[in-house]
Image (cartoon, rainbow, N blue to C red; front, side, top):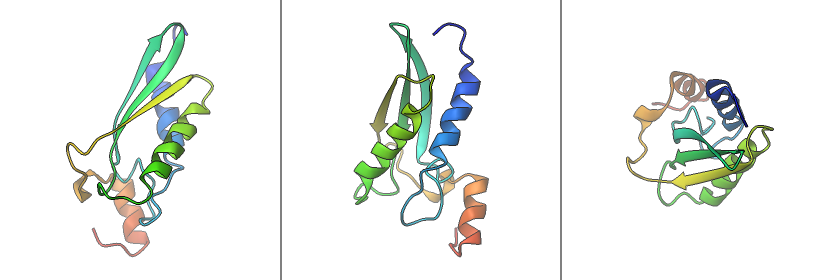
Length: 113
């Protein structure tokens, strides 16, 4: 996996994550601000994607589903062989983590921010 373009692959990863929506808020998990960090790691000639993500609340009833969906969405990329998702609540999610696109989506769907 030599000479890969990290920024290009991260953009593909973000594109994939934007297909996964929180079931209660009509915004994808990336624009909702649930993705804290995306890192690529090359190990034994394979590319591993490490993602730090959170949930809107620790008691989220669809936590497993969101994590599995995120992992699958990234793993389908040809460049990625393995996905590790670290669920964290530090720092806790709040509405300030929502991107501008996410805020626009929320407003368009009647959610006040």
